[in-house]
Picture 1 (tube, rainbow, N blue to C red):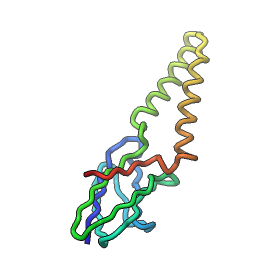
Picture 2 (cartoon, rainbow, N blue to C red; picture 1 turned 45 degrees about the vertical axis):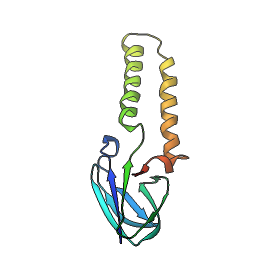
Picture 3 (tube, rainbow, N blue to C red; picture 1 turned 90 degrees about the horizontal axis):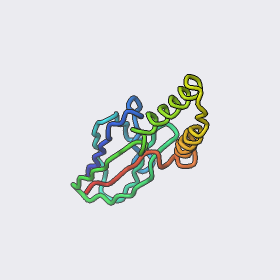
Length: 137
């Protein structure tokens, strides 16, 4: 038997949600924020991916030898740690400028829309790129 170790990074954007780990299309467990899980598999080829709600990761193929230990790093939304604070900051500056200081801050709406569309991409068409699995050597 081989071991697959999955190490999940700690990220505040997905902190309270568990991420499901799938091996050969079967849910084998869920991993909490910042935790490490290990799964025993038979030697041979295995397809691994992760899912959180309707979003997921790319599928990776591994060829596990007997008694081999394979380590995989699992990360969440690539820009999640800075995305929301910047988006909220832009909207705050826009609101302060327009309603308190009476400045025309319409150009900031463009940045907000671009960031919203970027997030929307990862929640729709790019949903299988929301999470990232990386094989560690």
